[in-house]
Length: 389
Image (tube, rainbow, N blue to C red; front, side, top):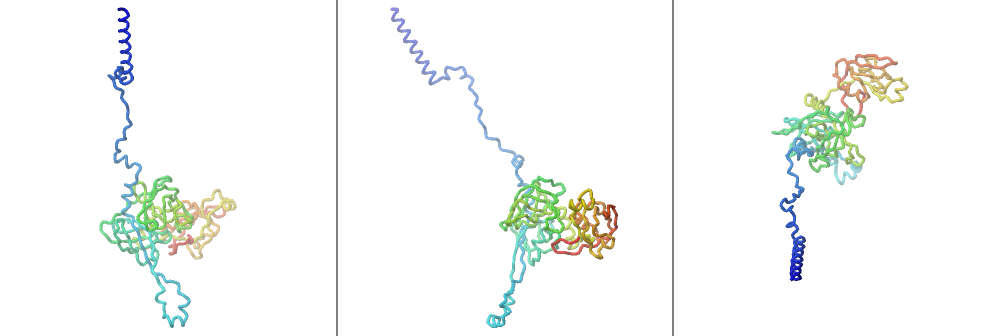
């Protein structure tokens, strides 16, 4: 009897252990009190959609949308004479083929960009874009094409003003280039290589670039925003879509952008534009001197404490400076109380003087500072090359 009871107990225990093993293997949660408090698993959720303001934080599309309608493509053409073939002067050739002299001309075309600056249809562009053109056509951002007339141009700053007639013309907003700093984001808008309106982005690489031999009067904004042939005359805008410069030139060995582009500051362009619109040309002051930069060697020979100023290398005979007693070898230190840093700065200061009025110049002669009063003359009209200041 005892043996039988023990056998039943052993069998029962074995069955319970087997059941426990099966449950522990297949349904372990049945044996855990954690089943009453299920574990919370954190899933990596997809980020919520950003607000419109946050989504545009790294985009400049609002700035482009504000400025792009005011940037236009400019197409010009002109009649040029083809070289006359020597056979044209041969009487025998002319006897058999007739006089071909009437057919030795052909039309050439070029392209560039411009910026509508007023609802009256005035457009700022580069002088070299429309130089000598007898037909000018402007294509708006919406594809509409209009004929344009040349209001006037200024070869010495490479600026020109055109005008088109139309209703509801979009005009760009002028910015403040005086607030630009190296490292600021800028966008260039134009028509490179004729592919159509294009926007490129970069930063302000340098300010006040001069003595590049591009224009007579230079005070360029340098940028690495890609500027290519056809971009000339287009807009350089800030991150808010305001005009800060007119794209003018690139430094290139291949004809394409190498990340060094130059734009005329909008403050300078505005001054030139206003004179062209009101008078058809730009009037500048002139005193008739040729200036030279003061090198370290010259400063040492003249016993100067710095290289600032402009050495008068030549004086135009009979000019305002000659009449006032200015001599070669004098060093120009200031114009109307404004310091002269170099010949380029001197040229800009003198050009800003009003012709017909007296101006005060401070010069250094024989280690002594002397003040001169000079009656400012009018700067002669000149092509795009440097002239005496």
